[in-house]
Image 1: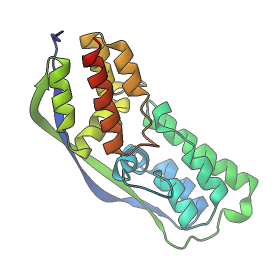
Image 2 (image 1 turned 60 degrees about the vertical axis):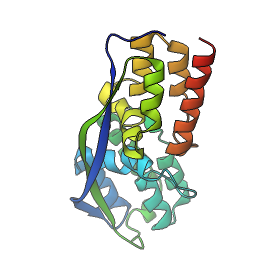
Image 3 (image 1 turned 45 degrees about the horizontal axis):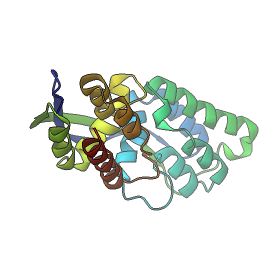
Length: 219
């Protein structure tokens, strides 16, 4: 069994949420908030809430889209906001730009809805990420599988979803290591194609473990 020179170090992650200084009663104020809130807030309401909503059965995992639907009843705009796939973004700046563009274009096209008050205010929140070593590392595919199987939801999310911003690549920590350290490019690509929107964190992990088991049976 191949062993990597550089091990995969598993991390335990937790997230503290705090309310920011911005809120919105309507789309015009939402647009202002999107312009002025910090990057941690954009991250919280898009990348982070995808992890929070791993048991979501209806609505959107994107908080901006969910508020637009639930509070303003603007299904058309909500669908546009939800269509922004976080897997396509390597920076918060690019995601913020597209969020602003979608809301601004909607307000320009239908100005009568820009000042329509929602049922509830949208409060911009932010996540503070705290990470510590998990106390487990992997040099082989077998050790890697064992580590993945024991990760918490937050830790799996850290390595599988939020890592895209950290790596500045359209991949995740798992696939990056499997490809670069073990040379398992096909396995890495298959894991990276697991859909984070149609799968819960649990089902994504289960698919990943099945892919690893298949690779171990057919090296």
